[in-house]
Length: 260
Ligand code: COA
Image (cartoon, rainbow, N blue to C red; front, side, top):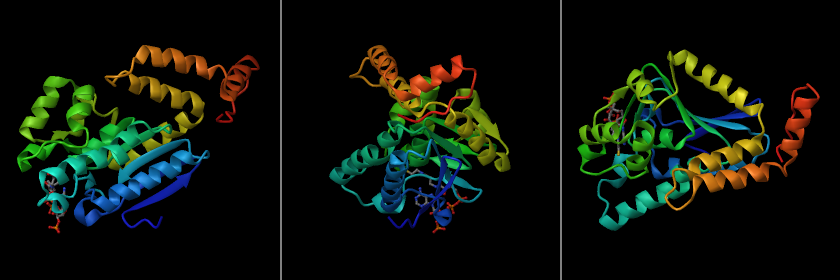
């Protein structure tokens, strides 16, 4: 696929996807969502890629939301379809990806932007970042999973306040709430993200895939997280990564995981 609105850089088994519509503060239009789906899918299928970082271009915005100009005249039916399709191809898709996804939040992360960051497995922010779900100020509610994932991350009361006020929280508040894991000056955002990604990339990709599955299972209403963990734990014993990891430990050497 020829990408218009994103670009991808790869280095040392880590891929960085940059959303690149800076004049529109990287707002997620239909094409960008489709490009992101393709990029995440292809990178997930690439055995060489062990971690994916997603960020926004420029110094001002990660993503300032879904592209309001595209849905301003939508009907009820079209509104439902927009949310359902977006959740399926991007937000749920990212959350359930086998490859770890880190959101490097480099500025405004609003509406769909914060929802994309929350779908990622964890978040790191620059100190100028501002986060919020401003949808009720537009007469709509978050539709890309925000009403579900924000309470999971910050608790129901804080999520209710953020959603109802349509306000923005600072990077430091987000850190205090547990919405982001680290806050650093903007120039340190990608270096720190790469450093953490590099640490992750040394570990078993198969075990990480099952860890993601087990953690996510605890947040699904129709799956038992503990049962998922037991099953995934057992499955690991049949993998080459487990043989390599345990052999390397016993032989006092660094593991070189085959990823199978
Ligand atoms: N959808 C479409 N276009 C958007 C956008 C969005 N979510 N967010 C920003 N843009 C566009 C603006 O329309 C503007 O385009 P223009 O130059 O062609 O007029 C451009 O990006 C720059 O934004 P601007 O508003 O001029 O920047 P600012 O620094 O004054 O304000 C924000 C920044 C983020 C506070 C403001 O852009 C904003 O409130 N955006 C919408 C946030 C939102 O409600 N998101 C949830 C959508 S569901």
